[in-house]
Each structure stands twice: as structure tokens, then as C-alpha cells.
Image (cartoon, rainbow, N blue to C red; front, side, top):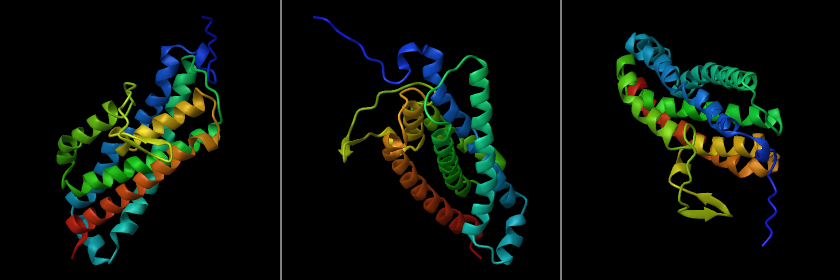
Length: 218
């Protein structure tokens, strides 16, 4: 039996470090979870939220303003992480524009999770205590820090659904692996992008509603 191995993209000439980089890039975005939550909770802890409520500011307006700032921070984080990886010899394939698209959506998704966390806490100290649980799940059960092979529960149009796929960073890592290692195009990562957008919309809607109920009701 003669076996001919054909590498996908540039995977055949990459070492272990290169395979870890896409996950580490998403990890740099996940790390804004606690700072983003604290930036929201500070308004509650410092009693500024009372003035905001009296001004008739809606929860959506307030959280959208903070989310834009945190999204910029998330993009800066992944850019710095990528520059550090390139400085250490990382080589990638694919389009940086596609990487940027994934980074933006991933940042919004993590911020949406921070809204839910902010709705469950009232002080920065509570954020640092309670926030370690979702941070732990996002870091170690989505393939970000450690590559995992999850069991498929079912599929939708050929797209596998696993327990880990309920957490948005799972799709972010898959998308970056397809772009930077397998040299795939935007059409190939479109299912991951759709999954990211759907989960982000759900997270954001839940976060805004919970935050309004907990902190902004007059």
C-alpha cells in the first residue's frame, strides 16, 4: 500500500507553536472579558448609574457605547498578539482581512458575555470572583488554550454542533485555523461566521435585558 500525504494549506510545514497561534490570538480577545465587565460595573459601584437612569438613558444605548470602546481594545489586543507571534517566527496563510473580520465579531461576542456577567455582579470585587468561572470555560473548553476534539451531537446542513459550539470562541478558533493554516477563503469560514453572529446576538440580547432588569430599572 502506497500512501501519498497531501497537506492542507501550509499545515505540512508548520511546527507545534504555529498550530497554537490561532487559539492564542482568540485568547488575547477573551482576556478583555474581566476588564470589559469591570468598566460596566464601575458605573454601578460608583453610583453613576443613578444619574444615568434619571437621564432616561436606555440599557441598549449605555451598553453599546461601552461595547464600542471595548471592541477597539479587543482588536488592538489581537493585533499585538499577532505581531508578537510573527516576531517569534510564526508564518501564516490566508487573508488578513478575513482574520480582521473574525477578530471584530469575536470581540463583540466576548463583550456580550461580559454584559451578562455585569448583570450578575455589582462590584469589581464580585467580577473578579464570579468572572473566573466563565473565563475558565472559555479558555479551556473551546480549543483556545488547548486544542480539543469535541463529540458531535448533531449537525445542521453539514455543520457539526457540539457542546463546546455553544461557546462562541470555539467558532472563532475554527475560523482562524481555516484561514491561517488551511489557507481557506471567506466562503469556507462562512458557517463559522454565521454561528458566531447568532451566538453573539443571543448573548447581547440576554445581557442587555438582564442588565436593564438588574441595574437600570427606575
